[in-house]
Figure 1: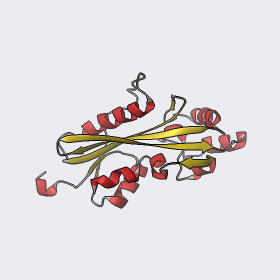
Figure 2 (figure 1 turned 90 degrees about the vertical axis):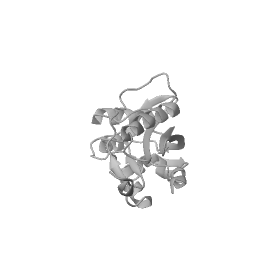
Figure 3 (figure 1 turned 90 degrees about the horizontal axis):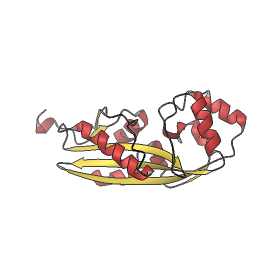
Length: 185
């Protein structure tokens, strides 16, 4: 690929939600899948540092393919307990029971490569769930909305019905804190 053909931004993500948001503000963005598994967790890190670590490891997947690249990692946590992407409906039920009627945090770590420099940032949003009933928890866990989402929910879909309130960047909960990305334009 020559310099003339190099995209303005390469995003290291396979998340459909991130791709949709990034296409809105960066026409011509190119997506590549990360060559890193978030399951390689560093338990000694705080959730914020862990999100930055994962974002950086994903960013390295871009290698020298792009002058400007970005990678993200979103973590849901409460009292330093991390709620990862659930693998089963049972996992979703467990997460929702733990978070119902409580406030948790959603942090998205961002690693940005501009030419040969790497910059880091993160956003934290506080989310409070409603006092969910057993039926609400069961119905959501039986839906097809939770796979691939940190904490097992998405603010942009019916998962919003789980939420009483949030403080911070709505788009951060979707995995792309848009206000932090404006500096790339």
